[in-house]
Length: 238
Image (spheres, rainbow, N blue to C red):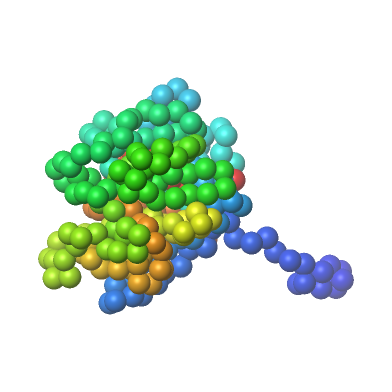
């Protein structure tokens, strides 16, 4: 069977669906998961076919249409009943309209934004730009604030801020072919978090998902964060 061992040694292995890596930057630790959108099944998840909130990474994997869960993350702020705070669209169906105006909390710290997902692309748009462009999105989730807007940090982020939380969010490449989902592995400020997307990942646009309830599932890292029941989630499935 020596021939079989040699064949297995040189047979090309399939590329990982999602590449997740722990990265130290600016005195902080982050986990960044990079998705090639055109080649992977990236989608939003909120409710099952019966209209019940899925609520957890295990709930996604238990769906009959999902064979295997590769990556998942909470993807937008939600109310006590776990309904989306802002715009939400899944599989072409809108269940929550766009909220364009300022409001309380981080969501209302304008500018905020929308993650728009299609079969072969993903783009983060500033909300008013999203309204003006009216892009066709199979899936969309609104959150806020924006972390990076056309290469610039959100104007309200302060280098000397003392507000520190575990935070998560997403940035997209200019061509929409790559989406990078990031969670901090410790408490960070908005300025530190946004700077990681702008200065290390060098992504032109990035959107904040949440703090405190930030959670990540990364199969290749053997990581599955638990805790709060979640609202909208984003995942790569097989």
